[in-house]
Image (cartoon, rainbow, N blue to C red; front, side):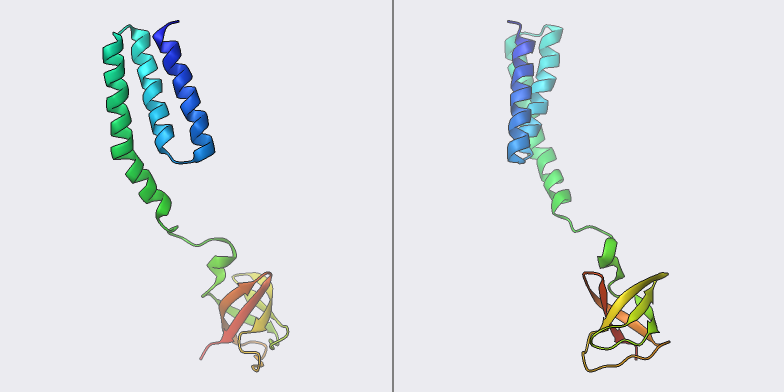
Length: 143
């Protein structure tokens, strides 16, 4: 069996193992085996194939893996979805109490409740969105 086929089989096996473990290291080593398969297909001797595999594996694990982990661990730069509404201002369209009400947030009408259950916020008031619970905005009047 040609050596490049062995490297391809190794690359595929490591790729499958990476899918199940999600460590990134096995994926990088799989890429190294894939590169080595290309080198083997060119016809380089097994000693050079092994050297290419070792060097690219080390380079991937030492250089690329820390960079990938740093990107994975960073918090997203921008909030989206309902979490992006927290902190925005809203306009009261129907009186807001501790039980119900309606507000307009950025062009959308939302059901709302007062963050402080004892408050009654009149129509036309400007409020801040403190939290979103399901489809209900918890709001507090602006001072």
